[in-house]
Length: 160
Image (cartoon, rainbow, N blue to C red; front, top):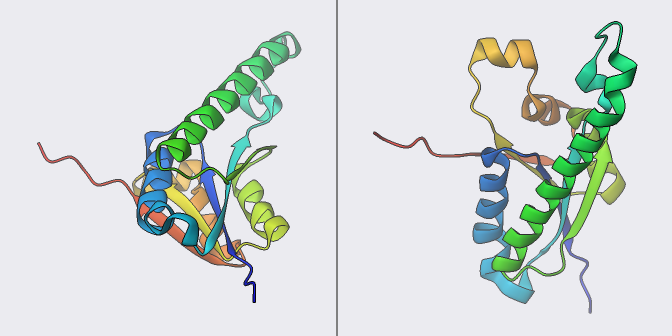
C-alpha cells in the first residue's frame, strides 16, 4: 500500500527570516524523519516584476527596466542557490524549486493551489503594525487566503 506524501510549500525571499524558516522546517519536520518524511517539499521564490520595482518612475523608467530585470534574475538565482545549499546540508535531495514572477502574496496562494499543498510555511519579518500596514504582510494575506494550513516561523530575537 503506497500513501501519497502531503505537500508543503515553503515561501522564500532574500531575507534571513525566510532562510531561517526553511532551515527550521527542514530541521523539525523533514530532515529528522529522513526518507520517512510525510512531506514533499516545494520551495517557491516570488520574483517581483521589474515594473513593480520601478513603478511609475516617470521619464527614463523604460531605460532602467532591463537593468532592474537583470538584477531581479540574479537575486532569484542567488536565493534558489542558497535554498538548494540548505536542503543539501540537511540531506533533503528531493525538494522542488520554483521561481514564479509576481506579487508574493498571490504567488504563494497560487503555489498552494497548483501543488495541492497541505501546508504553507513562511518566515516572519517581524514588522510592527505601522510598517506592516504600509508594506502589507505576505504572511497575513496568506493566512486569510491560502486554502491550507499556514505556518509562520519567527526568527528568535537575539538578546543583547
